Length: 317
Image 1: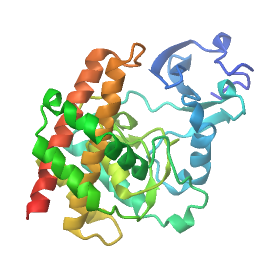
Image 2: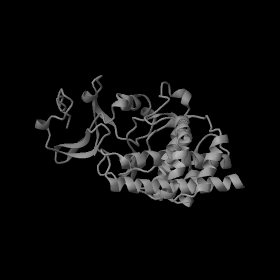
Image 3: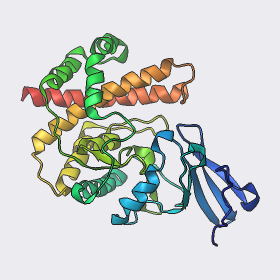
Image 4: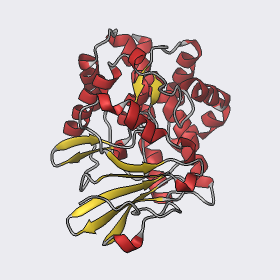
């Protein structure tokens, strides 16, 4: 069935008169909801308004200029409108069906195949890909983490983190220069943005695509915590993921240097995340329930502890 031309009203909302039913999928950062809607009991689509005002037009641009080079590992846009008025921006995407967001050996190692593939694309052939995504660049995160060192060190007893480990992170950070090599980055590759559908891995929400270090996507997959998608990582699984990635990328890597850099990157990013999560926990109008934020805090502490321990070993060897 072809979608009616007026399926979305002039005000950027679904035309309720033309649909059988709808259901909320998730709420965006600006409060608007992504919804599944049905034209019949067997025909459904995903309605996605602009969920973050800072990304106006970006997802459509990526679908038109980057993803045509990709295999069918993402939901396709069927209709869209871009407007200077954020509330009038929307997309209708194919409905993939029930999504299973699972952090398992099978799903993550399957994902590494594709991450290594798009990281190996020549960025010279990807004209006009943005140089920054939604979050600050790593150099800005490093600046924040260094600036907030005293505050963070005072919190270590409450976070049950070993002071010597965290001091090692800061010591290494003070002399370490992160690689300047850039790759195409999904930009927001947490567990909620990849899913298994009918035994196929699908990757969602490409609006944060930009150029960044390989560690950006890797951190989001492995060690980035999210309030809605709990996961557990172990040092053994982290190493397995990283080595699977290194075995599949098409550019040269020095294994020990790459692993050391990842663990420092992850530790520093996790310090920055802990500061943000604690800020959310003290906010009166936090977006996420306290229980979810506390679980996110626990996961981030675990990642920081594991990566700082690995870094400590690299520095002492």
